[in-house]
Image 1 (cartoon, rainbow, N blue to C red):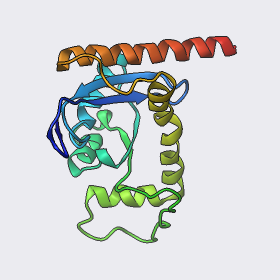
Image 2: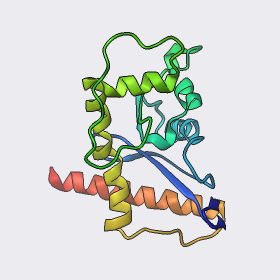
Image 3: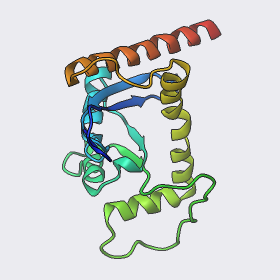
Length: 182
């Protein structure tokens, strides 16, 4: 994977979580340094691993691109459309997003422009705000509570297996916690 200092033995672990129990419903590992090309593979992983196509996707700005937003729209197949809430840029801690401008979008507005406008609405803000309570705790628990900060194995196939076990462990512990709370 290309890093700041050249190429490194590194991997980009991806996980998608559902909002009710915080279970991981899709996971994969890539050698891509950023997430720009990972939205479609992640949706396909969710379908393959959970048996369901997601109705909506909340994602950070790393996933925002015209191509990814076009994929979510699936204009040629409306039944495959996925509601998307993808940040269009980085937001500094404590910074408030600008309120939604009134009126129609300018002619020639891109999908990213439309997404930006959508996220500026009250409804869009509310939906996107849920992201920090859905997937961020999953990565926090894996990294902080369980101490998983790096892969122990080498080679993409072995690392994919290691990440699958980490995600499975997370789900088992979540299910155990839910069961204990009942």
